[in-house]
Amino acid sequence: MKSDSSNRRTASPLLSFVMAGAVLMASSASVFAQAMPEPAPHQVTRAEVMHELEELEAAGYDPSQGDDGSYPADIQAAQEKVAAKHRAERDAMMNAGQNGQAKPTP
Image (cartoon, rainbow, N blue to C red):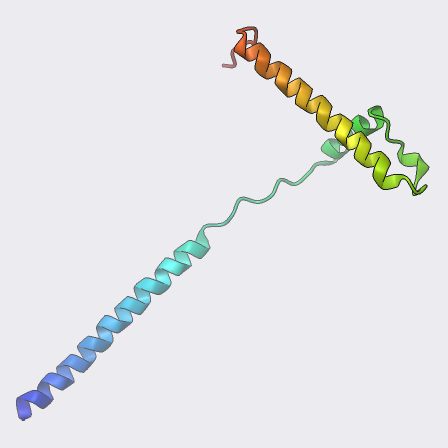
């Protein structure tokens, strides 16, 4: 009986050590997963905002009208015109690149 009791005393700390190691490995994996930050969203600069406003005004949006009841519709229409312009420019650049007319970038 004495050796059976002795085995229990040795097994209990060993089992505790193994359990603690498993918990430590599991927690360190979750800490590593949390330590990987997501990329920060792009902070829009004042110059970018001003450029966007200039593009919207060129597309027909007039911010001086204020809230005249057509606000959402007129800015959305201007945004769609600007987006269409950007798509057309991007498509033209891609077509020029496919035709070999684009300058290679270093």
